[in-house]
Image (cartoon, rainbow, N blue to C red):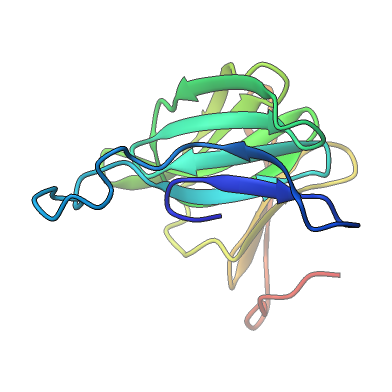
Length: 168
């Protein structure tokens, strides 16, 4: 990926299989101010879907095999960090009123779901889904479980000592 375009390559030949995005027509214009031009910011995949985020909050979900756009939308909360896919969910770290929130979306349709506003101000080291489908947010001293459908906290476990940024 570049700032403006993603490309998928055939693993056997290295040829470009598909691209998403395009370079601005006036890319080489020395008079153009690129500071506020939208650019690709982050990507994640689950093997079937590829999500790409633009730094202006626009998101697109593509089919990995073909590059076909499944859905595209402006995100409700500006992305500010981590993102993750785990069918049927897409989760991204967003910002709301200068506070970090975790936004769940339907992976298949891009429809917004719950917004989780953790009451723990520590930096989240990891986020993932448990085997029973709960969203887990891990800090250096806590693991907190949230129900993705209701957004309610199910439990929080305080860690004795400090959690390291590693999962098995």
